[in-house]
Length: 119
Image (cartoon, rainbow, N blue to C red):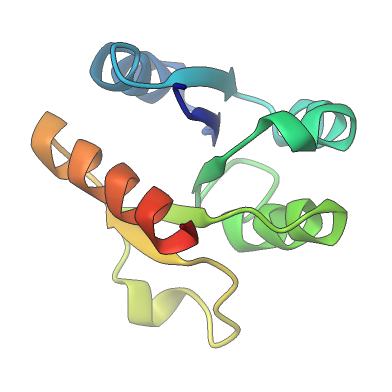
């Protein structure tokens, strides 16, 4: 059974890149609006296997979004950013960090590592 990923990034071009790279291996639920992602997750968290969330979004920080999602139900989570991970947060709320920019192989390896961490 294909795993379902919740992906949150306010950059629609980056969401298209996620879709292009991951659609053949995973079921994807993509949001460019964190508030809509939270509403979706409240009702559908049982159907999500893992979360990928951008750190820098226009109104929200990814670690805050992940924290709210985990308050509903914990799922393995990746914080994605072009910023050095040590800078991002002393309160580490994610399981793995994926660095932007990414290529196909790096993203696929990262998602598989994230899913394996939960097994």
